[in-house]
Amino acid sequence: PQGVVIDLLSRTIETSGDGIVVFLSDREFKILKLLIEKSPEVLSRDQILDDLREGESASHRSIDNVIVRLRQLLKDENHEFIKSVRSV
Image 1 (tube, helix red, strand yellow):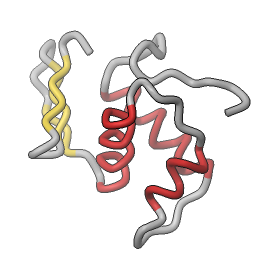
Image 2 (cartoon, helix red, strand yellow):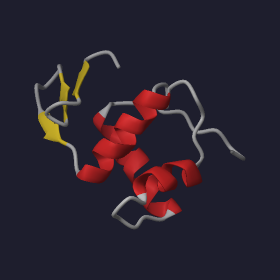
Image 3 (tube, one colour):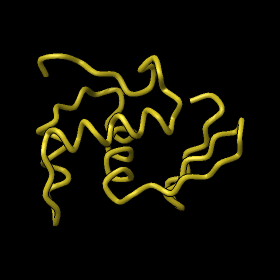
Image 4 (cartoon, one colour):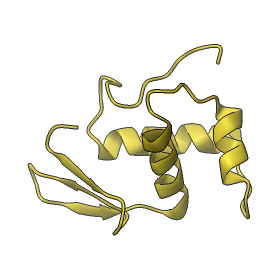
C-alpha cells in the first residue's frame, strides 16, 4: 500500500504520513503474513482458521475483527489491498 511500510521481521506497520509504527499482535501478524504469502489466492475464513489453529483458538468473528484492524492500519478504506469475496 502506498505510504505504508510492512516489516515482517519486526512485525510492524508504519505509515509514512504520520510516521507512526504499530506493532502487530501475533494473530494480526499471522493473518497478514498468510494473506501476503497466498496473494492473489482467495482464502476462506475456514482456511485462515486452519492456519491459525496451531496453538490458538479463533472464530469467524475474530478473523473478521482482525481484518478490520489490518485494513485500518493499512489505511485500506476502499478494500483495495484486502478484498472481501462473498460466498467463498
